[in-house]
Image (cartoon, rainbow, N blue to C red):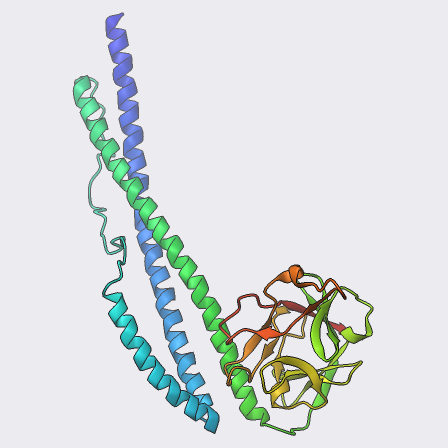
Length: 333
């Protein structure tokens, strides 16, 4: 009876050893895949950095084709030098934190005894020692995999942010090129169509009250209908309220107004008209950096007196999308 119990325990230990060895094999294969995946992520990150550099260079070139853009580039040169100097000094004192050694090469040539011959005559103590060592190896592998996955998750978040920045810079270059093509001032424009714009966040409609841009929940209000015009191409548009015949724009103090009856520099806008979600962007706001129409308080900004949300502010540039109002354009037949 005693021998049967010992043999049973030994069989169980041998099965445990076999299972652990298999788990270690899978762990090594997983680490190999994670290392390969990390290389792919690093390549994507480098590509995005390269694209952003090209877009920044293109934007500077396009800006330099106008006098105002030329002087703005000169100012940015001075600012970049100052900012780079401060950044490098600050980085000396910054604790970069723990960094996973992504160059770590897992010894995949390590030969696990996957063809392990189960010696039923070996001692139980030896089996227990081997299991203990194997469990330590398995533990180390699991820690490495966890660290690698955490790092890749952070890298993917950074890549997502860089993709958004790259898209914004690409749009900026497109808009600046369109401005140069369209020219300035009294360039002839033609109508694209009639539209109304719904704020995706609140469900309210873009409208006009007392020469001010508002959001209203009244979907039959005559002030929520707009004619959209283009100059040479339909990237840059002018948005004219059908009731007031005035264009959405801003005044010399930078305040959003709907009071000008012409499609000029201050009325140059960008918004998607194909039904895709998009913000409303003023191209020449903030000394040419542009700005998205924003609503910082959502429905909490509704005026108790007339149940409107007044849209008075914009962001500081095309990259600043905090509190940006997201619209969906609806074309009217």
